Image (cartoon, rainbow, N blue to C red; front, side):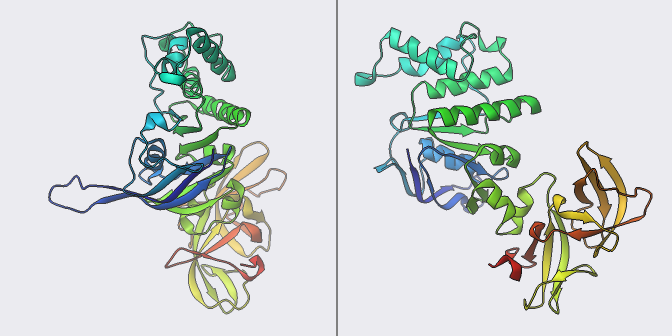
Length: 369
């Protein structure tokens, strides 16, 4: 099921009685979610991603714009008539019911031509439980389950209705690191097996990038960039997107373009052709550093953290916006830990330049933009 949002806006009235200024949670959101794809809505708290999700499912009504499921305008349609499955962050399971009863509950409320017999409800409940691999837990109560198992029950309950669209609101945030990894792999497997169009809301960029077919990066209710996860990581349109994606985060320096060269502080990094002189921010991904005795970027070496196959080198630079500069290099590359200074060459495709004033991307001549 294709989901299309056309110029969707959500405005909340001010909670401050002394001020009549309204709060724009989502501003002119236009995007088409392709049929059968998993799309991640990604951004910091307060960026409008959950509000967008609630407008898709009908819990919030847009202040402006239209929402379509396929060719059907569902903007004013109640949630129960939209054919959506919604999974909340806190599972929202009924504690007095068994797993079987929790999963079956939405089916018991079907009426008219959609009404099922008890045998049909039990069969569909078992099918949903098998899909999320909890069919051996059907007689347990939620209190007898782990966090990951409870989340699977919530997903099964959303899937049992055979929804046209599956909506997941930060479903992994209450799980520990190992369970998060397991459950996100499970969500991707289920989505691929069912082919249901899925919207996944998260503030965790690693989660969004690992399972999404496409990501939508948001800030203050406005779409910043849409694309495949790797494409957005490699080619961010502005400094916000570059900073938001990546672990460890991108290293940011103050710099300048002067006389056809890119400078970081006083270090002359590389030629940039005929670009006009201007003040810039320079972003370098942690994996973009190559230790080199005569490298153009000179940093003060703090310490080296051995991580197995990689080494994390922590240093400082006078022009760094971040407190430290963190570079990830192959463990086979020797780093003299006794030295006070480490010098780097920079991989050009891991270097990003942004206008100091607008924070928009400046494409160097070799990038062909």
